[in-house]
Image 1: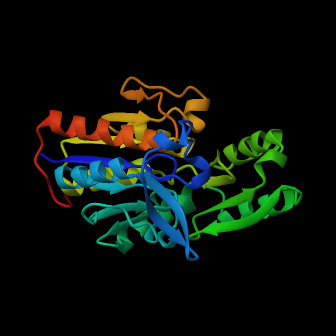
Image 2 (image 1 turned 120 degrees about the vertical axis):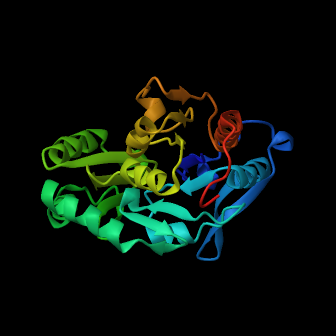
Image 3 (image 1 turned 90 degrees about the horizontal axis):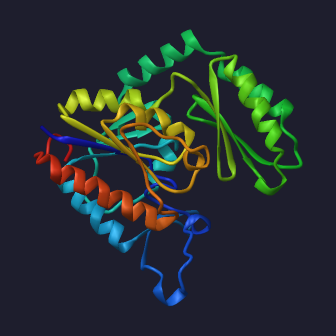
Length: 277
């Protein structure tokens, strides 16, 4: 049976210049490959070694990019290796099949959100009213599913984020602070649910996952085996689980390490490529 590998992207497999964490002497820094360009400028990178590892992984398993990004944001990423058959966008709100949104899946998700959570408009209005313009730079709604703020992190009032988390909890939403972004996401909107659906469709016998933020926690808990890097919300909070391996690696080299771990697990399982591999 095939192995399914569902991995977060930003600060897990791919990194902005600010998140690379290249602490070694310049002459010993790894060669980098740009995998995302935005507005004609390079935006995200992985090491050349990681690029080869991802290519090998795509040949050996069902690799599923799994991201909180919108479909538009995801589609400007150009990952090395075989084009994935499946991708999870908008934190599980969209399941892409050969690059096209699965309408039945999206309809199921939106129906559940309507039943179980306060409406997006209420949360958006609260964010607009409660956030301080001193540290807010942008306010965005993602695919009509969740909202986020882009902030000046050094000016951000951390107590405000905690208060927002309590307010959101009472309305069926969750809050995640990732770099310069504060996400407000409905609790039922999860990467894990979409991963389970892809596992069902592909007949995967083993699921592997990796991620760095609180929005990845459900994905890591749902997978048979998971990994997290030494940076990010999960590392900062000491998140752990019996099936989770906490890696010490930080920055872009953590992405390389995670891909080595994935490949080792796939090869150890002795699985054969399945649909989408």
